Structures are given as C-alpha cells and as structure tokens.
Length: 363
Image (cartoon, rainbow, N blue to C red; front, side, top):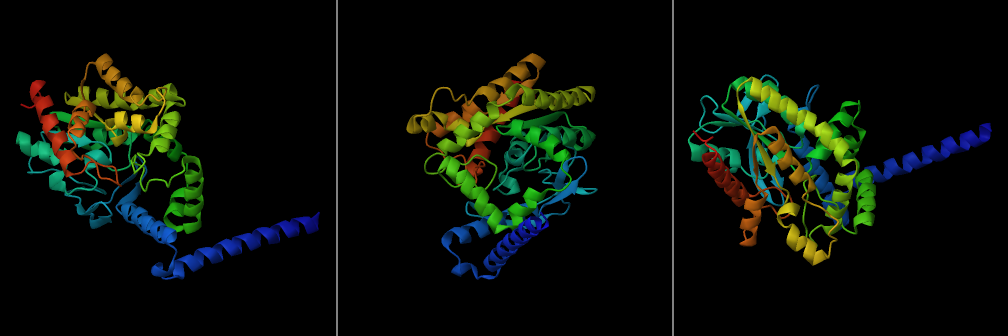
C-alpha cells in the first residue's frame, strides 16, 4: 500500500513539474515565436489583467474601482483613456459632466459605465449635456444588481439627487447569483488562473470550443461574431432558464431594496432595461441560424417590465428603440467587445431624454 501511495505521489509530482515547465516555456518564449493561437491567448490574458488593474477588493461590493484611476485601455475595438473623475474615500467613479450638485445618479454595469468610449461619449454624459443637468456616473463594470443596490444606497442617495437611473442588463440574473456565490469564496483561484496560467486558459477554451464549436468571447459581454454566436446564445438561454424563478427572486430582493431606499429618500428611481446585442439582432440571428422557437430570448426582459408595472415605477426598455435603429443598418455595438459604441451611446441618450420629457421627469 505504501509503495502504491509513493508511486501516486511521484506521478502527481511529475505531472505538476511537467505542467510548470510547459507554462514557464510559454512565458519565456518571445511572443513572435509562439503559435498564432498562443499569441492571441497571451494578448487576451493581458487584457484580463489590464482590465482588472482598475479594480481592488471590497468587503461589501466584492470589488470596486480604485480611486484616482487613470489608464489607457488598448483593445482591438478601441483605444481609450479611462479616468475616475469622482474620487471618494477608497473608491473611484467615472463621475459627472459639468460639476455641481447632482440632479441624477446612474448605477449599473459596464453599459452604464461606458466601456470602450471616453467619458464624453457615454450615454450618461450625453444625457446630462442634453438636459443641462449634472448626472453622476456611479457604474462599475462587471457588477450586478446586488452591487448596484449597494452603490445606490451608500453613494447615490447620499448625493440627494432627484432621480436615480438603475441600469439592468441581460446577464444580471447570472450576476446576482454570482455575487452571493463569490461572497462564500475566500480565494478567487479561477480568476488568478485566468490571468496568469496559459494552460488553464487553453483547457477552458478547448472545453468551451468543443461545446460551442467556436472560440469563447474575450469578455463576459455577449459577443456576436461571424456566425452570430448562435450556439453561445443558445447555451446562455438554456442556462438562464435553469432555475429562472429562483434566481429572479434573488434579484427581486435587490431591486425591492433599491426601490424602498429610494422611496424613503423621496428620490425617483427609473429602471432601465439595457439589451444585449443578441436581443437587438435576434430576428436575423434566429433566422440565419435556424434557431428553434423554444429559445425565448425575451423572457427576462418581459419579467423586468412586468416587475416595473407591478411596483408602479418608471421603466424604460431600450430594446425597441435600438431594434429600430439597427434595422436602418446602424452599427450600435463594438464588433468584438459587444458594448455600445459611440453611436449606440448617442442613440440611448437621445431616447432617454425623450422618455424623461414624456414622463415629466426631465424638469
């Protein structure tokens, strides 16, 4: 028995040594000598590290933007400088436009933050300029409803705005569930490996590609490639519908908490449904790839709109507006990254201004 254990230990040690040697060889080899796939992968890992360089750990939010952050983000879709103009004690936000008291504040994820565009091209900044009122951008990329609500209660309401925009995105059921799961995880091993282990990323990419017959997207934002990402969206919808009601109830608790805190502070909460590119281009994606009718891409969107009706709160679903613009051939999203480009942000700002005016909330 002892000999068997020794052999197992030696075998494991040999495997670990071999993996470490392979990993080391990849890192020390000049990038131009690496195979194209490894060159692309190491560049993507650098993007992961650069993106996470703006974040620091936080006991309440899990992570937050470091104050006084100022860096240039290089991506195949854009080259943009990102700065935190509103730097509070231990945290930074992209902040406002004209300065002065905030008429409104916006919480949300990367679509509200404005990933890929400079501050002056975000929908928050453009809306502030169009209304002639200050709006503080308090969004943090990669977060979800649990964090939106906490940012709203801790930072947005403290500004005493008249309006708070609460951005809700297509992947927010996953984000809400992930928040509570990560709260129980003491060491984020997978995140470290994603940043620093080429072999880990190769294995992960291979498993995903085997299931989807295509490479995975570089970010957690739905990405529509040359084949529209049909298999990826199919698997995403299957996952979204798994325990949908249970995860929606977790999300509702966060939404209700944000609504209750806003009402107690006598501040108008406006819930925004921010659609993914999949939702906006769904008709063409579905037809081109012969996807079945059983894939209900509108389930979450309908549920959010119904929630607004039941709670009698202002809600603006941007999907119809963006679909109409997309039918006219306008490019609203970055081709690889998947976030709104400059034109997408401009259209969202214009639509929001019209919505607020019609609802009597722009004054």
